[in-house]
Structure formats: C-alpha cells, structure tokens
Image (cartoon, rainbow over all chains, first blue to last red; front, side, top):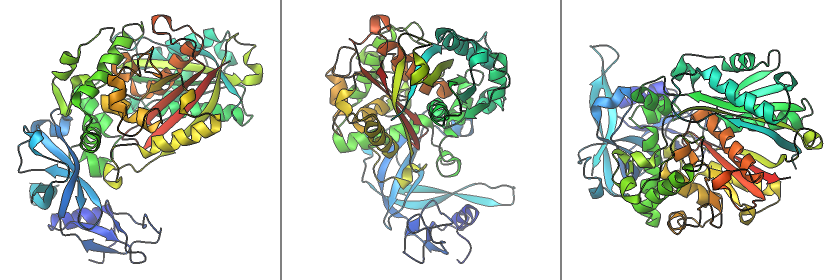
Length: 134
Length: 386
C-alpha cells in the first residue's frame, strides 16, 4: 500500500474491501477523505493505513426524497460515522429499518461492510462502503 | 470600519415565474434598485451578481454579462459570484470591497436564480452538488439530509424538539403573510407543520424552504456620496466571511456552524457592537433547524437555547430580537443565488421604517446571516440606519 494517497486510489482500496485513511508519516495524523497534504502539519502524506471499520454514529438521517440518481433507493439512511482510529466518514447505514429511526441513536456502535454495486463496465465490480450495527 | 451605504434596493416577487426568463427576473430587481437610487443603468460602474447554478437550472453559463447587458449596463465589469446559497452575499461583499478599494463609486450587488425550470428531483440533485460530490453526494446525501444530520445531533446534545423546529416554520409563515413579495402568504399551524410529509427524517416538508424563482438587487456607494442619492441611506457597518470544511465528517461538532461563528465574531468586531445591539436579523433558515443554530451561532442565545427561544416568542417581530421578519427563506422563498441580497433588501426596508405590517419598532441595527451549502461558507453583514 505505497500508492499516492489520491481519491482514485482510495476507491481502488474500497473495491478491494479495505477502508483506508491517508496517514501522515510526519505527525501520524489520519485524513479521511484522503488528502495529498496532511491537514494537520501540511507535509505530504505518504502512505495508507487500513482502518478497523469499527465506529459509532455521530449523527444520521433517513432520506425520503432523493435526487434523480438515488430516487429508487428511498427510504435509506445516511450516517456520519466516527471511526475508532479518529477520522469520520459519510456512508449509508444498512441492516436497520429506515422507517424506525427512533430505534437508532447517536453513539450506537457500527461496523464497516462493503456491498457490491455496478462498476464502470459489466466485467468490473465496485464496492460501496456501508455500515451495519455492530 | 466600512464606508459604504445602500442607496437603492429592489426585489421581484418570489415564487414560481413561468412567464419570465432568468434575465428578466434580474432586470426587474435591478431596475427597481436603480430607480430607488434615482440613477440610470449607465451610472452603475460595476456589478457583482450572485447565482448558484444557472448552468444546471437553465443551461446558461456566463450569466453576469448577460444580466448586465439586458439591464442596460453594457461595458461595465460584471462578475458572477458563486458560493452555493451564499452566492449573493459574496457578491455584496465583493461590491463593498470594490468601493472600499477606491476603484468604483457606484456599484450594484445582486442575485438571481430560476429553479423551477428543473423537475424537483433535478433541483435536489443540483443542490446536492454544493456538498462534496464524491464523499457526500455519492453516498446519497441530499440538502435536507445535511441539515437533518445537524438536527439529529442538536436534538441528541440539547434535547431540541420537533415542536421547536415546527415553531420556526409557524413564526416565519406568520411573518410572510405581511410580505407581499413572499412566495407564501399563509399562516400554518403547529399541527400542520408537524404532520407534513417526511423529506429527510426528522425534517418534514414544512421544515424545508421551497423551490423558488426570484432576484434581488441593491445599489451601493461611498458614505460620503450617499446623501446625494437618498435621504435615508442604510450604512454597512461590517462585511465578513469565513469558510469551514466542506465535509460534515471533518467537523467534530455538528450542532453549530464554525464558519458562522467565525464570521459573526469578526463582523461584531468590525462593527464594534455585540449581539445585544441587533434589533432585526435575517438569518439563513433554509431548514428550520438552521434558524435555531443561526440564532445560537450569532450569540443571540446560548448553545442549545435557540429552540426554546423561538417557542417562547423571543424572535417574533415584537420580540427581543426579530428574526426573519420577511418570512425568511421558509415563507419568503429561497431562490438560492438571490437570497443573500434579498436579506439585505429586507434590512434596508426595516431600517428605513418602511416594512409595513411587519415593521419592527424603530430598529437601529440589522444583521444578515447567509450560509452557503453545508455551512462551508458563511457571510455576515451588519447594517445601521443613517
């Protein structure tokens, strides 16, 4: 995992089933979304660190009216998940009933998972990062 | 210290305009502002025009010269400013700085948006482009969804209730009744607000500002020259802007907007006032939770107390600090790129005591709080009666 910490490489890792953050070798800051320069010390982030995928819900919503692209998916949950290692990420929460949001709480433990979605060509597969209740 | 005054203001009716093109909406607002200032289009030396996305809504780019041309302002520097829903507040700030620099004496700041040319799903998708397209829009976030996430965090931390959110909509609709240019002139009940169709839980339809067409414009000049244009100019005391991370996931606190707190801090300092001086404020209530957070970020109420304040009537027209007398984005409407200047148009009328039935009693100081996108931009202007 020595590739440049670009967005393209981040999604290539997601497609391999790995959730990674950009790791700064100077100050140990983790950046997610990945950045080319460390948001803490501004030095060039040089490597990827794979994250455990364990985290808690910082907040969430249930989308009932979506844009054109995801209109068929409603209702679905979008969450901000705070990962154990520090960074947070925006992703769908699955495995819970989107029509019972009262049963979901800020602070709930969740775990990363990957669901297959259509790739750029029929032969290529892609992953979408999601979270499930831990 | 800023030495710029508003000497003319204009705004179209906000709502659905099937019979007018984007440029015609602009021309109507621009001409009203120019007439108010007692000048002609040829007297305007530069124009800064806020617009979020004529490219998506109307398949039109390069709109600044188009707008200036049709408004009779050929030849001048005309520049589009884009900062999502804060586009025209950044246009106003650019216009103020253009005068402050000594480059120009008479400058127009305006905003225009015609959203109803697209279907509702198209509008939702276009607005979501003001969030991080890759890391937020791709997982499926929508704009109501962004503010719903803030609402859930605010509710979890402070116990803010759905009833308090609905109270914002009830108040702003009550104010909109008295604004002939508002999209909606109808009161709503708390029950109606609470039972509306779910958009992004916990936000229902009545927690959301509508899809709107409209334009607003102001004419600015140096304080020294202002009296030549009108007997009652409105002075600008502060113009400040701040940014924040684009992604919500990069913010540890989802109950407040850092950009708003930062811009407000700087603006109060620039105007040499504190929040107690503000009599009337137009704040960015794109969603009901946004008004509650705004009143806390602006220092009118302590963090977590904004919900109770609206429920207690503190922010009504006759309250301690009148919030969104125009009806706010909720009832007046939210043609995104026009909203920032439309807020200033309302303050202009309030500070000149010409706001009719929604007039606050002799206000001295007005504040406008315009938020771009997810709160990645916030622009604050503070105005004072002459």
